[in-house]
Length: 212
Image: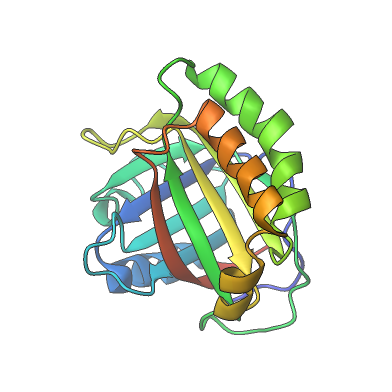
């Protein structure tokens, strides 16, 4: 199901993300949870090529009274309490719980070894976000989700989840950067606050099951 309205920026009351191996299980659970009256928003991302991907599904949900273990059954890679910053929002012009138009590059990021989590998130928010908005010219939707707490023992040691959406695969491939100079700026900055050797990137489709 999809409720009417537009996505809102700013921190959610209670937001959890589960990274898993089974897209079908994530969609089933997401649809069930989206029916609960206190759920504000529920989105599932599914890998375009799940074989060999660091994760094949991401279920992200915001609500008022979610149990810490609410998503554990689909969080084989990790379940986390997250913050949320919606830095660029595209108009919602579709309905239904099928795939949204376009493609998402979803990143599980790890902080640079020289930084603690607070310094990593400050740089991500105050320095990298403006650069991303300037140089990812084809991007039409952008979330930063700093990880506040791992909720499942053995969760992958990510420090943040970046969700970068493009209107098409062609736009992602051809307009990820505004040119070679913009690419160099983004890569240099990313290397200054994340561990580029340990970050994971998965191309995914999006299913918006509930939005405010």
